[in-house]
Length: 96
Image 1: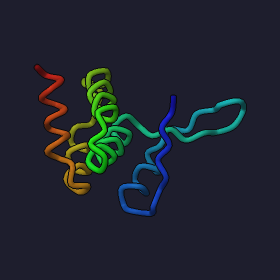
Image 2 (image 1 turned 45 degrees about the vertical axis):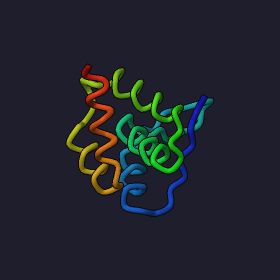
Image 3 (image 1 turned 60 degrees about the horizontal axis):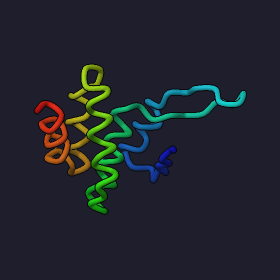
């Protein structure tokens, strides 16, 4: 399963594209969002829809990548995107 996030040209979208990992799939270069950018996009999606699936995905990603996540980057963009409180809730839930 994959999620596709479309760039709308916002500063976050431009940053996410600049940070994307480029991997080869079936001989073609494909951009993949970093864990941080995927978490942020899912936090936005969750804020719009209150989707429990998005929340479970967020918690799972934070749990799996917790030690490697750039928390400064996450907090910066979560503040810009208006989802900082929910990000902090995810950090707290995983730390319990």
